[in-house]
Length: 322
Image (tube, rainbow, N blue to C red; front, side):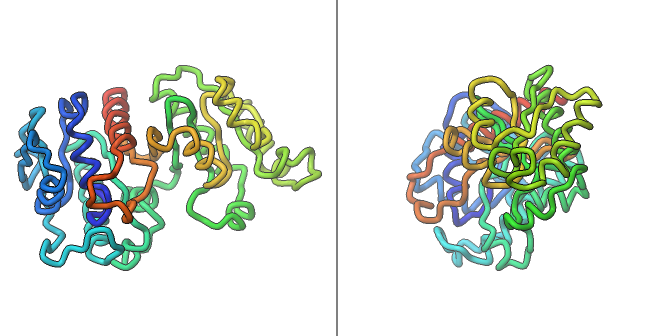
């Protein structure tokens, strides 16, 4: 359900009102009282919320939305549209329960609504975001954030660290692992022989060392090593053109070296339709590619497009992997 104080409850309900989504087998991990309150605001009279305590109690129909009630919010103290400790703690509890259910094979995939990093930290959960929670609680060492849209896919070597750390910490071994995750993820998405474009980290991809040596020291050796292993990979390519080339069909996915290098082009062309995938986990996880939007939360204004795409993609990937 994401952070209860944000737009998560609203976009989940709006998403379930879509005909293709309502036919799917969905369970919301969250708080029944919160979902009920959000339902009153949206006046989605065609939806019946069913409170359950375990997965086996779920009843699936196109008018029934199952809420596995973790009861982590005191509705009398609830603060919508604000950063607060109670909601941050609840958001963490929901994802921890989802991981438990996925590890026990009670569910086949997870689609997450947004959480708020500040609220998470106020509650004592010192993680940068969902991706790091998922990797930590599943003991997954090799993972990467992948942003996917029908027009463009981008996977990241580093994400929630400073730009200085991203540059200083660039390593051939990590780049190789992300190229491998890119290949595996695109095959799951139905691309049989993905073409992978690898961005440089410096202007003009370093231009043979004129603008930095990270390409010659780390990126070029990684690309060559993966080519030798049979991967269809190219680079390092100038960051100012590689995303346009991918958009025009030359590459199926781009390996970005740091957070904003990959996020900016994806959000420019797919802010409402982009989906966040955590590559490398032992189960499927997708997410919206936007935040909690406290400024419009609990007002009925939020756009559910990214949430709907995240749910659709979670089911597609779960079906593909069996």
